[in-house]
Image (cartoon, rainbow, N blue to C red; front, side):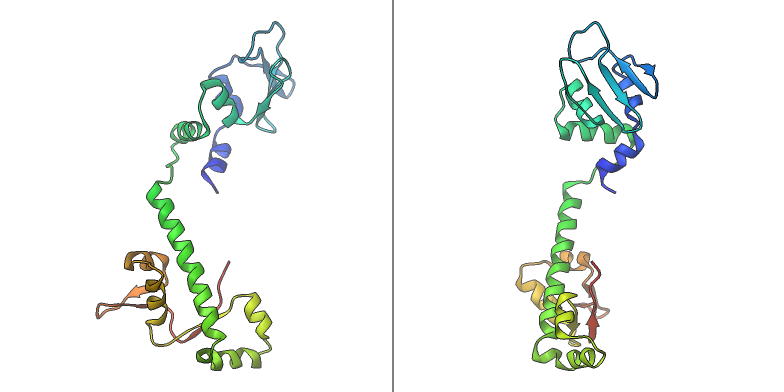
Length: 197
């Protein structure tokens, strides 16, 4: 669940709008004079079932709790997101965490590509024949990005290094591990690889 989705689950739009506007019950919904323009008759409605608001008067606009806060407090989306996340105690992902997640994704993507190429090469012939004998065609292998990890324990690490990945990134990506005798080694060795998407 994203931070935005989490906030929408935790923050009720009626409670939020009530902090800034005096709402009165109107059937299953709530109404008030619009806080965004002058009017005599209430045309501003909040719909709990949909978690939305709308002005049926001069504004002729509406939205969710984020758009209300942005319009009422003159926030941009980032400010509204930060405000609401603090309100409900949700920790915003840091730039470092975001970068780490991107690194992990890239490393796993490159690893899948590497293992697939190995399986389709001469080095993967034995494993490829094993799969063929079990009724898995080369087209299916390609469609599902099946691969093969070499038993030398260094091939993937060397490949990732050639792409510019650092040791801590590779460890974080979960595809290499620190061996007992010191150097980094491929986590998976001598096996058919089946990626999970």
